[in-house]
Image (cartoon, rainbow over all chains, first blue to last red; front, side, top):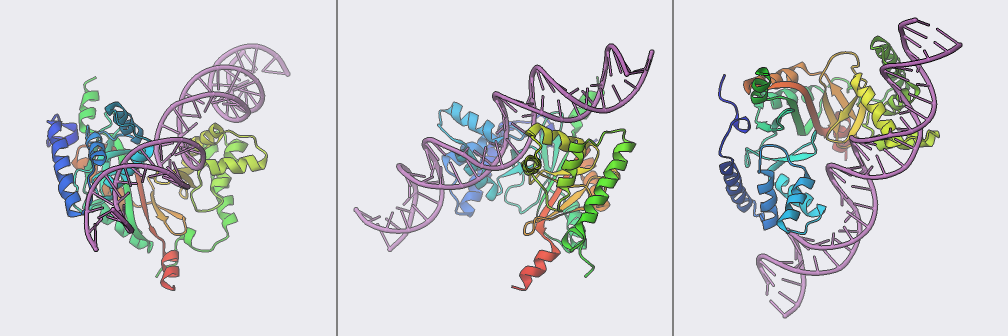
Length: 163
Length: 163
DNA sequence: TTGCTAATGTTATAATATTGCAAATTCCAC
DNA sequence: GTGGAATTTGCAATATTATAACATTAGCAA
């Protein structure tokens, strides 16, 4: 079997976060958008792991930071980050993950592990094309697609196999 | 262009509802499950149109019926109906639609019109296969997939074209 | 400075969903 | 039909997720 994809594999996660922040700065500059301290902090928190984080989890950390934030603060930051393609909302979990392909124009497909909670974002052209075809068959003009698959990741599958 | 799919086309919707209820009774019998009056009424309400209905919308109608229901009543009925494949939850809308292919084992794809709100459920083998392949490439074992496409349905597209 | 726009703070509340326990109903073996 | 188990429902409280509305502040250009 090929090596597991990033979230399922031990890795220096600080590097993930650092890279995400660097890319975010670049992208915001290109978009003439302001990556303010709050927005940057929220992005950093979302990137704490490859598990989706709820808006109220973010809020709790901000509170622990000493930042006296209310829900709109978090939702606004998340909206901003989504608009610039830096985070994705996982509709089936009401939670947010860092985008692993920021910048590229894409409609992601998310593989969500029921067991460990990690999410792997894929760019799956075959899937988007199949969806576009299905929509076209119905003369439907797609403009946004939510594709979320829950199941068991390779790591968790091999763990339970040992039991 | 081929005739529009059901939700987008004028039709005798009472027949949709009646058929859905009949099929539901059959399926519940086969499953040895009890389609109680509340459950049946909720299913009927969900089928009032091809637009997804929120749990609290259902609740409001039950209240208007004189049924003194609380949220758990509705959520329990909806859970039951989902378990038996009679309704689907649309994650991106937090709402529910009647299943148009009950009985068949399927993972639907939903085309959600932003304009009229109607939802068309498709069984798109090409899409599920593409998703399965993408998952398999990552050694991920899918067990449930959420595929929701929002956009413009043929009816709404031709309406706005006339403006 | 002044004035404009974008961003944030603040309070309140809306919308969606679940928990836990008690009461009633239904099913089924006897 | 009767008793007991299992399922379903009623009900109160509360948890979780998200937005509205309006005041304030920060950034920046003329």
